[in-house]
Length: 262
Image (cartoon, rainbow, N blue to C red; front, side, top):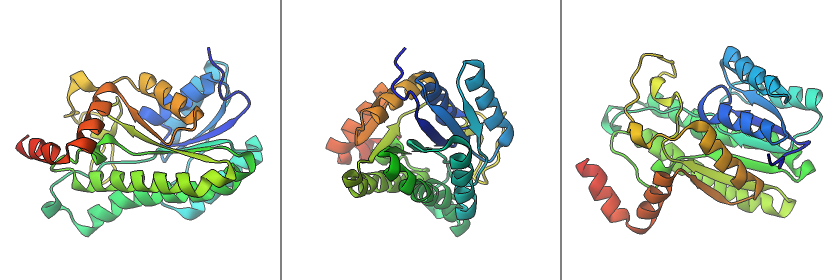
């Protein structure tokens, strides 16, 4: 097994489930000590337990990415316990669904506070320490920014903003020896469909995404880890995700027409 991240310290937000949990486990398998953050401490401890059961080292680091004080406290505790920071994955996110005409200001604030401002604040808290280690930053967007689906305006807008933010960070950090990789996944197994517009998890809520296209999170995590290690500017994950990104980039008019008919 490749040990690309041997001896490094990684921090993954949104690390209690889905892509975040799978990526934390993958980074640990590749030699990193991994701190996982999120709001559900029981989930974080479960991920750390799996890391340690496989012979790795992990740290449950609860925090709220929309709260600057919470983020700063998490970074301070990480440094106190693990000593350094080499890799950060700003993965925390959620989806507010509904047509634009039905969304309130509160809906928009909740969506952008978590998916955009939370990513920016996570990066801000980590950057001084990544500069010291000449490390790696990754921000998690979505292929939806290439093919905005009607009824998902807030989520699509937030991920388009993350895409822009990731590319700006790549330019700002490159001269300091720090890379920023923007990760745009397609459909990956996660709990995002079970979380409502208020951020509440419902285990019995159906996942309306096309089941045949949903890729296991561990497979996506391996591809993401390769891209982060290679310091790629952007990684599009899953075969259908690459196809969506290609069509969305090169045939935007057709994409808009097709999605509207769907």
